[in-house]
Image (cartoon, rainbow, N blue to C red; front, side, top):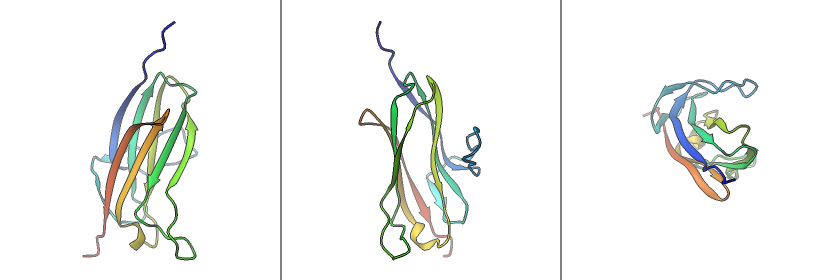
Length: 131
């Protein structure tokens, strides 16, 4: 039997409602944009729909502009893996702004990979609102 072709579609990107990691519900799109004001608790990212990839390992990465740790050193990008839960699955990749805001300003690049191939990617420009 032939293997079904995987399909990936970016459903939304931009500013979303607050994400609750304990809920099955994904955040709702508030504003489609790649320009994000640097405000505490603003949620931004994207939702993709992945078909025909159940149980495949999905790698994700959020490369931030230079968030510092407690010792003042740049934190590495946030990355990890999850397994695709069904053959028609929606996945949210995103982040939020927190204090201190200064090190959150800049370009945030987010991407997903399946079988070492980038299947979804978006960059967001977080800009200061203190001007």
